[in-house]
Image (cartoon, rainbow, N blue to C red):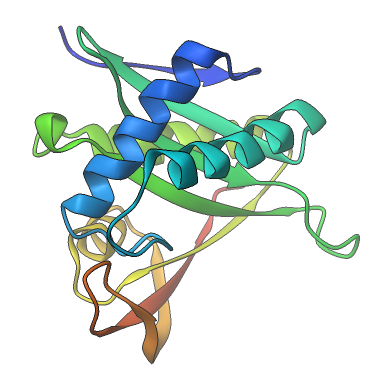
Length: 173
């Protein structure tokens, strides 16, 4: 089954468990997405509970991709920004499970996030990704505009500094 993408308007226990599995898989696979190894289920679940609160309050949009085994990808739009930025959203935590990589799911989730941003009245998206990493290459290929690199921005999950590249996208058209 080709993964389908949908917007979660509430996060139930089943989704919470699968999202924790996804985050752990990505961090164990080396993704620099705010967490260090070892990432416990308690920490992963706590993160998603916070996201669930943001979804419930309307501060975040959560899109998930699902295949026959459950949630295999996700991306978020952070809508809760300062009042002088009602036209903008941050794209965050594009995660694809190792079982679903290299099948176009990252692109599909990004395109779905762009369309959802437009539906939410947001015309400018901003994100950052590990410099020269797979996500960075994906965004460049999809036409996102590279702003620049910040050296030594974060740590990889197993340690060691990595830089980040900031991108933006005008998705108003």
